[in-house]
Length: 215
Image (cartoon, rainbow, N blue to C red):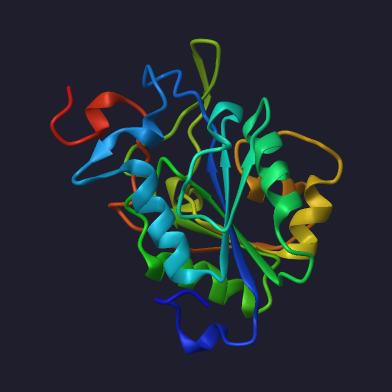
């Protein structure tokens, strides 16, 4: 396992697919290469993956596939997030037991959060995602009309890293479907996905104002 991993994962091969192929349309440029402290956003995410996993497949835009990064394997992504995950998954060694998918735009995820989702999969779940109860009331709408106010106690806002049994994740992606996260594909295929406590600081960089010193 990676240098920061725990003994509880001994004997289980865990690989990460780190998705960093986005163009950053809402940010205005590829946010994963923006500075964050003394490093880039991507570097923080890479280090967290390496601390908890045996290997990392980094998925980047095609024009970045030749860059020298701290990943074991670098592959070019696809037109959608799901396409990019599939490209990374295809490069994961076939003997991997668990695959962790993480968005490079979440640089604050800790190795402990990786360990938590990995442990849940080792405990028997097909997949595990970090989740937090939403702070706001959520409304379901049709256009501008509110049609339902779901019970907030039944809702969680999910994050990455998300861990899965490797065979389950491969099967869920085999049909080529798209989803906003990989857990949705596993759920649609009948897999059991559990939630572990997320981290409040594990926010996603979406707009320039999400980075310190930016507005």
